[in-house]
Image (cartoon, rainbow, N blue to C red; front, side):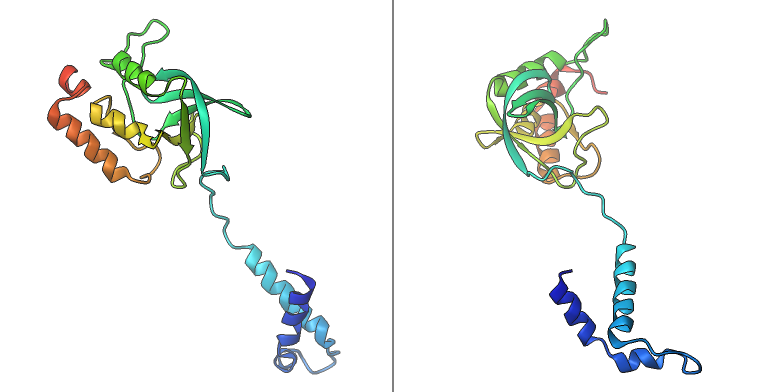
Length: 199
């Protein structure tokens, strides 16, 4: 609140009503501006007690571009920006896991990774923040919608049967279209839906 607004608020307070609430026996009336200032202080103190909303996400930029420097699996990439590299978890899809540390890959994991690699590796992509989601997942990966030249990567993968729709934290923007894309691939037995045993 600037000085001009503060003084205007004080002048607008009804001093007569304020003084009616003060005891009259042995009490010294407060100067007008002192009483009004006290009221303003109480109002501001109460306002400061209001609950603070959880910002989702913490990033102030809704969309950025980056170069894909690695494809980890069918739903995770590493990108390079002016500020360094970051790992990104694509919102809306969950592809089979690549086997690591001696563990075998899940059915269709390699095909899903290859599919995504062909789409984005060494390409410039757009990473878009979804305000309904947390900024990062439990592994510290950025949660972002990913597109290339206007093509939504997760939707492309879902329609090709690279994996099922996945909601990480809470429903995200456009989720209905993603679930419809998965249903379309299932019905047509595309990708893993025609090659892997039912879970």
